[in-house]
Length: 168
Length: 213
Image (cartoon, rainbow over all chains, first blue to last red; front, side, top):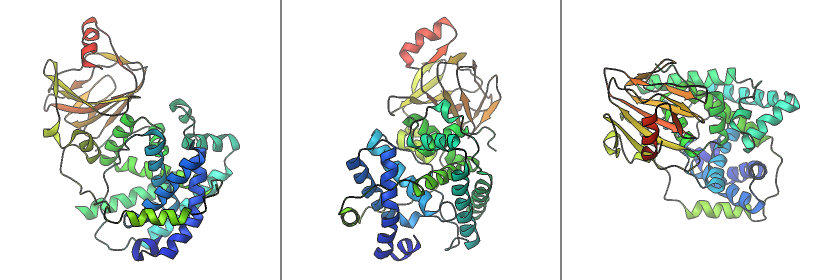
């Protein structure tokens, strides 16, 4: 991801594409897209990954998370024909490079989150998947429990606090 | 200091991309003002990332990468400019629907000094800006579905609590309330519903047909 963001490295992009594009397409099919729409959305999402690489902030998301948000927005465009209002961007802090401890910390916590999701009882895990595939009503989503988000949330929260402080 | 936040269901729905557009607008506007909920959203986005990472792979078409590179090359000029954080009253996502800050809102009077402006969103839910003069009340009403009320200027109080800028009240069928604006300043809110409100007096019910609320 950094080679793409900082050097516009096409070989690195091909590698990222080989890993993520089939997953994004599989995810979109689960969300209800037919194969040709999923292919089209995947290509558009991956093209957006290249174009928006300068906005990738590794202290707030790993590559999979970031690609998920881009693919989700393409999905809303394509499947639901709706505008997607996005929160205001937070500008970068004064440091040109993000803090490596934060980057590594976030990566570890995301890996732990993935492990925790895999370890959930089948019923809970499938509820979470259905929520993201768009198969749950609002009241069914309310039944989701057992996601250990505490540590990742507080890391992101303190990163945001530092950013706000630097912006003053 | 924001005291009233989004529910986890709303943050998950926004992250998953399954909410109606009007609800997305309220969530994005609140998150623009609230880092607690922004961190919550980032965390649920990480859950989405884990699901993509763990997704069953689907076979790509043969020229998929080449087609993607072609898309990239066809669109070199339009790198999105980074939005500047503004000193405006309306957060950025809302400005996209209004066409500017407060001065751009096309208010329509709904009587007693109160005004509203309906925002263009998809039909599965509706979004409007409400202007309540200082010290005045919105008629007592209940809800058929879910109503989100996000304060953008001033403050209001109802049977639940007091809500100031950035606070969001999440109301459902169980809540009957009469929001009253604080005396110090006119109150501007973003109100989003997925079903019409139920007014508890005869007159407002008549008016409801004209106000489209």
